[in-house]
Image (cartoon, rainbow, N blue to C red; front, side, top):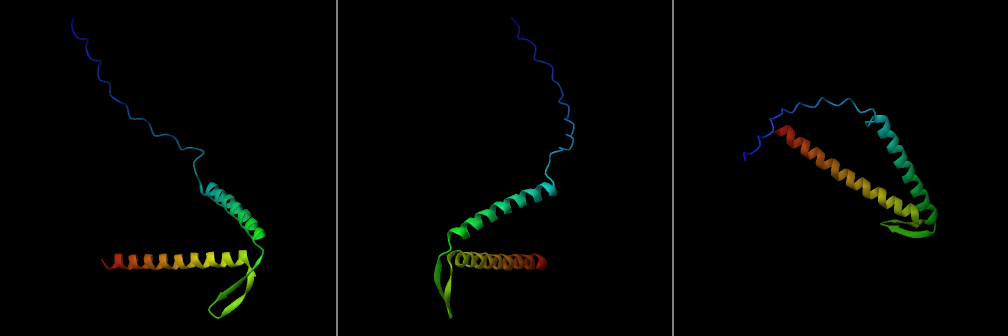
Length: 102
């Protein structure tokens, strides 16, 4: 018995571009998500502050005093964020200068 003939080659038609998705992301939806995320973060921060109200003794160089634990930890966190931002900013400036020179 002879082999059956192969199916005829069909050309693939290009798929038409899909219309714009009406549910695509927009600036407004991004802002809404950011507001919800920040509100959740604020609630968590309020809970943190409410649970850490005991006073702690803090000494740093010539400064000496007492402050609520939550305040001391938040000051330390903000200081760390600022130091990291400054280091990143300096690195970005360094790279931009290097790119301009070439």
